[in-house]
Image (cartoon, rainbow, N blue to C red):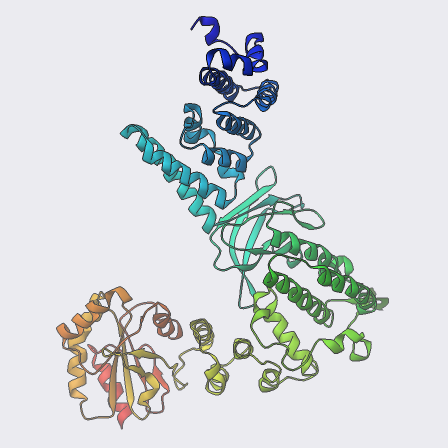
Length: 617
């Protein structure tokens, strides 16, 4: 074969003649030789196109596609696939690239195999998760077929890295955007916990106005992003693997087109509600009182209903969630205007200054919509707590249902309007969090404690207890309940009628261990009297066996409790309530379960024995 034949290209006159007269040439020299020659010329040309950095490939691609379409030859499917591959590669069409690789994976040209080691990175950026999974599968097949150990290791490293990135993509959410709002320096991300927004992360806005978050969502559902003010935040629906973009502009927040279908649907509603929220919260509308808001709101209601009616979404459950969100948002807006910071436009002089009169509607001012908001059984599940304002909604709903705030509303009356025990628990916790006295909190706990059933409830109850409890002498002891060495739950309150000494200690605490001989001596001297000694270990769960061993080594019998349980929460209860910053700590309680001292003398001091003898007289 001559040098000229080696350099033949699809636009050479000789090759054009060959293609146009293929049938005759097949008869003279055989179709096998002709087909091999055609495939060879096309393959070489496509190899050159693959390396082309400019746009000259377009003309040659068009010529090959037209030529090859007019004739039949062995290998045409491979050339057609490579044509698809070249144009897909140049235009970054992920699906076409993958289909070509999958259809022709048994006989890929070398340049395509090398593309898989770095030239197809755009698949990771532009492809969806399923497409990336297919690409990684192709890479693993190439790894298995690698002809040398060195090549096998190179392919493995490349696709191990891609697998790690895909794992991150399917477990992390990426949220980004641009900020043009003046004087805004940071963007906050909030999750919704028990119907309240809780800060997840804060990021600084870059010099060119961009921000970004990458985080593992704790749940699938609503989050909010934006500034510190409520008006500067927008609601998103996120789940692992999502990519989201929100631009924070001077006068609004924009969920862009680069979002999931769920957020694009939600964005339509958010854009409708932003003007309503502004008329409630923006100080520009401080004189836009109920007399202005109610006509505006009533005119807005048909638009909201039209939006709900027109929702058409592949996921029926999500469509229902958005419709429910519309209803909750409208109710919440109606509640908010009842005590929003508004003033009338009329002005009177006060102390020589013009002053606007505060403005609040009365029931006679309410539009008909208010008759539809409240009804028994409406709040029968916890869905309202998935909204960022859900906790506040509960308070406003029950307040409105019970006739307003003219007088203090009894908790039992509020609970009548809630059909869900978890919602009742939230209302009880809300009432507890308002308590100013520990005794009031205890009364609520005694009356409604059976509703507080989850670890989350207990954690919040403990936080209230720690905030209110002072440990003042003569006041009721803060109760605690922990398992003993046999797993039986034991409470401080179990020992009413006896003087109680509590020793808070840990196996790793040297001073604690040093007090044990003195404690054992004191216990022996008090045997037969109405005194109970309780040891409470604050060791971590991983040291549970060490605790059991220490009880044996030190000869500690009687009531020995392990505060940590399966988590840190139990330990925090006694440490927080009794304001314990260091151990050992000894506390004494009288026969009525009241505090004598929460920082008593240690057993090594004769003062503790004297104190106990005095209490027993």
